[in-house]
Amino acid sequence: MKNTTYLFLLLYLSFACDSVQNERPVPDEINTDIYTQIQEQLITAKTGDTIQIPSGTFEFDRPLSLDGISNITIKGNGMDQSILSFRGQKVGAEGLKITADSITVKDLTIIDTKGDAVKLQDCKGVRLINVNTTWSGGPKETNGGYGLYPVACKDVYIEGCEASNASDAGIYVGQSTNVIVKNCYAHHNVAGIEIENCINSEVYANRAEDNAGGILVFDLPDLPQINGHTCKVYNNEIRNNNHDNFAPEGNIVGIVPPGTGVILLAAKDVEIYNNKIVGHKTIGTAIASYYITERPWENKSYDPYATKINVHDNLYQRKKTIPDLSTQFGKLVNLLFPGTSQDILYDGILDDSKTGEHPMEICINESQADLNFANIDAANDFDDVDQDINKYNCSLAQ
Image 1 (cartoon, rainbow, N blue to C red):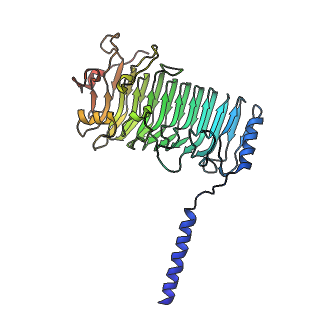
Image 2 (cartoon, helix red, strand yellow):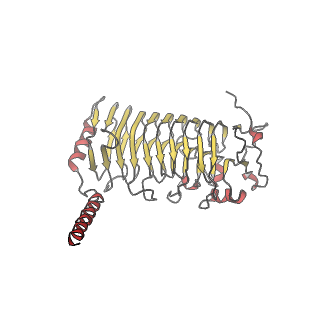
């Protein structure tokens, strides 16, 4: 008996020590040598250079930056090999900030930035390949807003990336022209993938799941580039985006009701097709004008309406549960359709200057017979909710 007790005690102590070791935090010291080495390479780089990030987990307390040197590649040894941690960040907000043309960032992970993980601004020719961004504490309001964040760029290509736990959008492209987002995985963000005020974009073969909202195509006012248009969203897996909305108060994505697959807000010339939009408790696809936000704007050139929307050949499967009750939009869905999620919801707000049978050119051609669809007549206080999807059986002129 004594030997058995002694053996049990040894096993217990061994297990306890292993558990403590496995849970031991990353050391707090900042690796100033590796920071200086990488930053000096970014400052002294010449066109065509590759900046190699070695394998390992490295702690930094300030951003890395590249400014004005074109045709540079920043390359790690793999997302699970080269990890840049900014959990002790004291200076700046971004992890990696780039203002240069013809830039490739690939094969690395950036975690725990104070603000955005990878920000590229005013760049022509952006390639983000196999880059992972996350916040290790899980989804929190205090996390940075964006994982991948190209803004005001031209020719943006994002492939094979993963983004999670961002308090705004995991993969965001804003005010940019010629954009491709493909084969990426966005999860546990407020918005998985967001295309905002962009011209000519394609989002395809991605997986967006466990976000509050899966894929967003927004056009917002009072930005340097407004009235974005021409976006295709196709062949994506958009599943179970029912996570709580943890956006900081005041952020526009705070309006996104948990349980939403796709949202088109004031979007123009958008085609949504061949997607699997599955497992959402509130809305599969929402089509809305900016008026639905009840927020003002100043730029008189801004067009707040959703127009030229073509939704077809998608697969919808609703989640059988009560729609979201934490946001105004979610509460509205539950008020109009108690306890029932909607596959496609249109706010029905029209531009009075446009006429004809389909004045806003909203065309919905889905073959499923059991879809929940509604035009909620938001402009008239929801007086005439219309659930006849056949009225939107049309095609857009090419």
